[in-house]
Amino acid sequence: MVSEGCCDMRGFLSFQILWLLSKKDMCGEGLAKELERRRGDKPKAGTIYPALRELKAKGFIKGKEDGKMVVYSLTPSGKRAVAVAKARFVRSFGDIIQGS
Image (cartoon, rainbow, N blue to C red; front, side, top):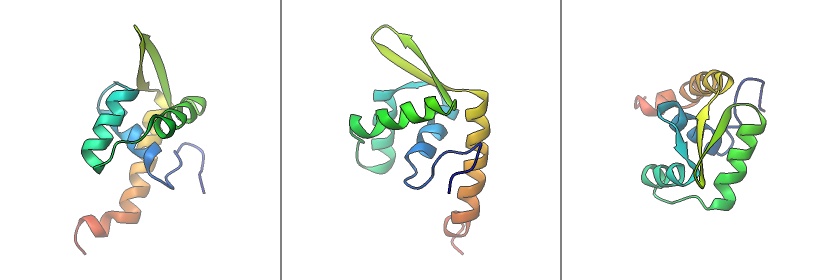
C-alpha cells in the first residue's frame, strides 16, 4: 500500500532512484549505471524511464534539459518522500542490516 508522501516500494526501484537523486542530480543513463553498479544488473530503458515519469507525475522529481539529456533532481516533496521511504526501509529491514 502506498501512502501520500512516499514512493511505491514494492520493487524498490522508485526508492533507489529517489535515494540516488538525494545524493546528486543525475540523468537517466547515469541512474541506470549507478543502479547497475549497486545491483549487478542494469535496468532497461523500458524500466527506468517509466519509473522516472511516475516520480515526476507525483511531483517527487523534476527534470531539466541539458542539451540532449534530462538531468533529474528531487523536489521538496521528493526530499520528504525519501525520508518517509527510508524510515519504512529501516523499519522493515533494519534487523537484517544489523545482523539480528
